Image 1 (spheres, rainbow, N blue to C red):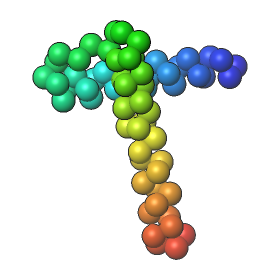
Image 2 (image 1 turned 90 degrees about the vertical axis):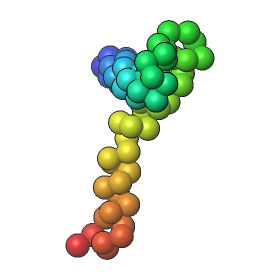
Image 3 (image 1 turned 90 degrees about the horizontal axis):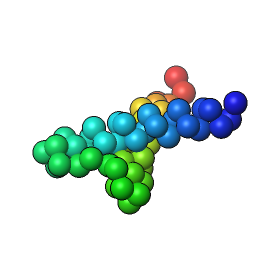
Image 4 (image 1 turned 120 degrees about the horizontal axis):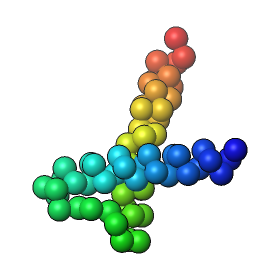
Length: 65
């Protein structure tokens, strides 16, 4: 089960990363080679987990109220 969820998160992060980097490069970024795949997964992971990090920071800022 862990293997399946890892694949799903990895592919989702890659798709999101390719989309974001494609927007930033005017559509030239494809994310197909090994180095580009890694960049796409890294950017997609940041985009995926940013709302959770913002929520935690907001909880800390408001004191949990």
